[in-house]
Length: 452
Figure 1 (spheres, rainbow, N blue to C red):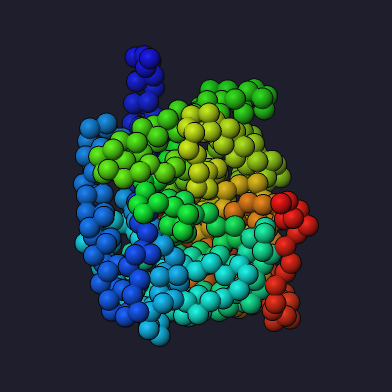
Figure 2: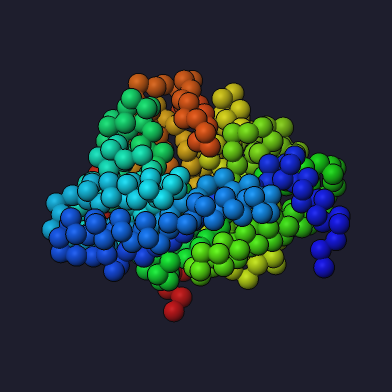
């Protein structure tokens, strides 16, 4: 039974503490759109997406009005295009990216994810074509997001793909130089990518998913920080329990929205992703949560331990609130999208090396990090390899979303605007990884992958 106190408490979270539903994401299978003709495939893709998601945005807006819950984004994810395009006669998949973009605009969604390839163990013809198409696809579309999975705990790390993705990121930055390499903000390189991620830019609709499905991604760093302000000076047991209780409340709201959207759209409910997704808004920051625990500035010693506690407590609270928690679920640390991270990086308290250590215990990885435009492709590849190794060994999802901003140097600032925020250009190592990346091949899976 919901009492008056709980209603007022939730209202306060919404009004004063930046609580929101970050995204309703509809996953759509494109497997039945495949045709030998690339043009016919593109037509089928556009028709299916616009037919299936025609009411998605309106439904989200109606739920916002009926329940008073802000729903920031409405998005679509689709079957990895490398699979869909592999049977076509297309020499590149830019035409498919444009069909996706056109469908996204027609349905009114913010982003559409799934211009993706899964190459952790090797390439198919479709994978090769898709990856080669990424720079032009992202430069010539507005709402299309791309991802490539280069490693997993079961398969190891495809170092040929790692090398190539460093080059692809550089090409994407060059083709979108007029917007400071913004195309790279729509490109993620994964290890252990999941099939039900509702967050961009890494969302795609896995082949194990139903024909269509509704996933919801919640947020609420501001709510967690406000809760911790009430237990200042208490021990870490109290801190963990406070975060768990708060995550429970946030997840319950997310499940309510997900089930209501599912009912109204007559589409199956998939999962609630309870990731704490920050924004550049003051007070809506994961970094500020860590600082509320007693870290003077995010990046100081103790930051990794604080983040580990936060991530674990969020998961524990969330799984008690819903039987269908999935996606990435934890705490995100995207530098340009988090006011506290931006501040810490700008004054030098937070380095790339410290961020890498933090990714060992948080959700995803090195996210929305701007590096100098002259950073070499091999250095970017080496950063991807490090992050993929963390994911592979720890059996967790990790990712890299780096933006080598053309013409920018350490100390410069890049303005992306909106939820993507402001990116201070961060220093990378001055020492070369060329020979390491040039080896190619595959880093074998760890021994603990043999669990059958």
